[in-house]
Image 1 (tube, helix red, strand yellow):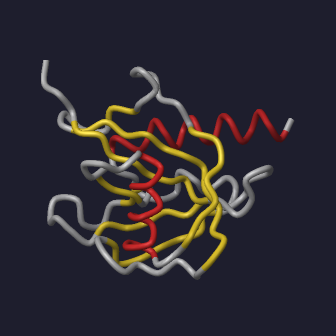
Image 2: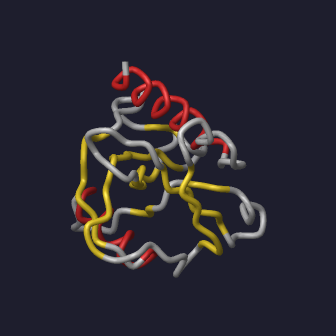
Length: 142
């Protein structure tokens, strides 16, 4: 079994208690991923906790400070298998300082309205996460 590298990401929403809008980020590189959409985030550096890494990545990639909400646990020991080499932990997050900008890795950001969360071409590994987020938000709205 290959050991997969841990990455962290955020499902940035407009409201942690009752999310409606979801932020998607379009990759600008590498070439084989360019034009596809993902949750912003990145790798955990040695000595960082996953939460510290996520805060750092969101500052670097989007220029924002966030409040983290609940973690969205995946089916593989709490993580989401996103590639053959990476697993991801993901948290709901809300921007508390700054206006998200595509500073690194991305060329466009989009706030997706309810019912449009599947409207962009998500990276394959992120599709099951979007489905789970949609299910969670729909069940909380009932």
